[in-house]
Every structure is written in structure tokens, then in C-alpha cells.
Image (cartoon, rainbow, N blue to C red; front, side, top):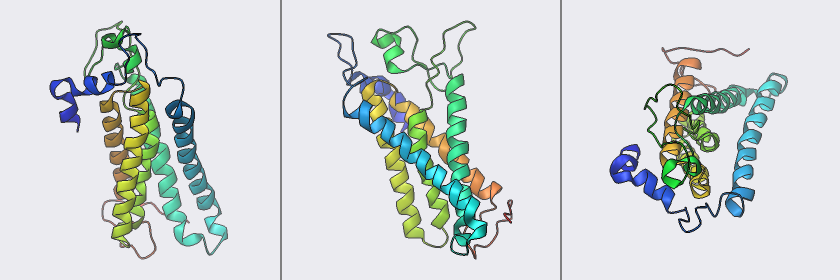
Length: 221
């Protein structure tokens, strides 16, 4: 997807389709369904999921019902927190701007690739990867909760998490807040964190009865 977006300026052309050249504005930037409902609503769902996982993980040792899913909940809480946190750090270091700040749409910052360097003193855009999309992409971590015991449910969770991330990212593209490539980089970073945390941090063992991985292990009392 990143390669396609880099081909023939597709990344910029998709963003341009939501820009009104006649008045130099982004019609959906500050009003309507995208800005007033989908943007804050999506953020709150992800925060609520993470908070619920922390609560269940904390109370799991006190309840025989919750104990079997305690390790899964801690994994999910860490996966959401670490992946979105890393995306936020990378975004703060990124030179790439939001479309509404890009020179091609009348702004003052040049649209650059994720790994492109800039000269000292150049104004930074601080906009890639997409932080909003990362919260929804983090829901892909549910895949690892079931991929050994319930593979169909695991794949469904993976697909739904990916679609949610793309949907959250699309909202930002419509608003002029992100280029499409910002969302794809967010997906890559989040999935890398979720996978490394599962295989190395938790040793590939979340559900009761899962055989431990030889890569690493994290024990919870």
C-alpha cells in the first residue's frame, strides 16, 4: 500500500480530492460527522478498551473467573499503550506535515516521506505516523489472544482491527489532517509492537494451556 501511494503522487492526489481549490479550504476539517463524532468517538473507544483491560488485569488475581484472562488483558493493555505511545513519539519527530499545512495545499511545510531527512532549521510537520489511526490499529492485538486456540476468531479480530484502523485513518484524510501514507506507517509500527510484545515480551503464551515460546517469557503472579 505504501508503494502504491508513492506511485504517481497517489498519496497527494487522494488528499487533494478532499480539498476545495476554489476557496483554499478543507470542507470537513472542523465540522460535520468526521470531526464532531467519528474523531472523538473512536479515540474514546480505544481508551476505554485499554482501561478495561488494565482493570481486569488488576482484579484478575482476586477472582477465579477473571484469572484465566488476566494475562491476555495485560498483554492487550500493554500492546495498546506501547504501540500508540511509540507512534506518538515518531510523530513528534517527523518532518512530514498534515495536508492542511503542506505547501501543495497552500501551507508552509513540504510533504516528505517517512524516512526523509531535512536541513537543520527547517520547519517540521510532526504529523506521521497517524496517532488517531494507531489506536484502532492497536485492536489488531486481539489476534494474538486467540490465534492458537480459536484461529477463526483470531483472524476475524485481525481483519476488524485493520479495517477499524483504516476507517479511523480515512476520517483524518477526509478532514485534511493526514495523508493516506501516514495511516499505513501507523499500521506497520503498531503491528510490529504487538508482535514483538507477544513473541518476546510474553513468550508467545497468553491463554491457559498455550505452550511457551523459546524466544522469551513474562510471568505474572
